Image (cartoon, rainbow, N blue to C red; front, side, top):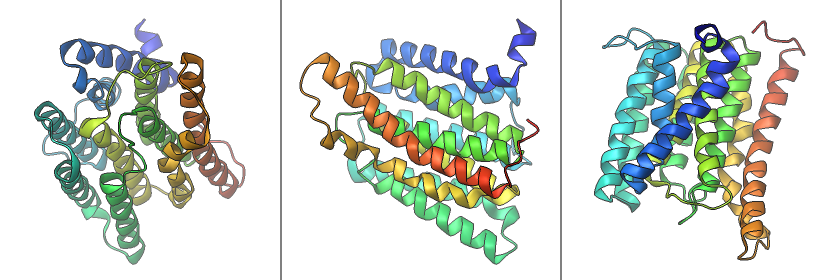
Length: 279
């Protein structure tokens, strides 16, 4: 069993999927509006199991990522438990995400390219915090699918760029999001809330670590950003009110979100010269 848990494929797919499924289910039983917090919580649990619990204060960018994510999860759970919504929740998310990005980026801000990368990341974080396209009211499928796609794009790009730890954690976040999506298919059971937006923010933080501290082709992640607009697909599908129609609509939204991620991964592979990662 211990050998199985040491397998990189299990660590970045099956393990976070199962952990995410369990945590979403437990939080659903404890307090239904907090179920979405199982995504970020699952990511943190798998991080601690695979990478280890980072020191505090953290000496590395991955350690900063972990503790920033933990702080964001705490903020998200507190806001969702208190029923904080709207602009107040967006402002909290934006402050957390901007502060986390700057904290992570500080050691790398020694060039114009790094400063430009940080500005792009901050702009993306603002879109996640204040954009409404990624989180339509009453539907968790579209934002969860957007998270799945962005995390896949970061994980795939990192894998091609031979950044194994980032790839594992990004794919673990994608798998945790997949667990939440399974809970909400074919019938949507949960809201999204600030805890869900925090999980989207973690994907941005992972992209930041990839862009600022590795040689991977992180610029291709811009091609994955249309995944945040996946919610618009639902408006184009005459799903109807039946169970089959709703299930098909959710599947179409998820597929539409994943397409830009696959484009980004394909671009990273092409720019690498078609060389396979040693991982």
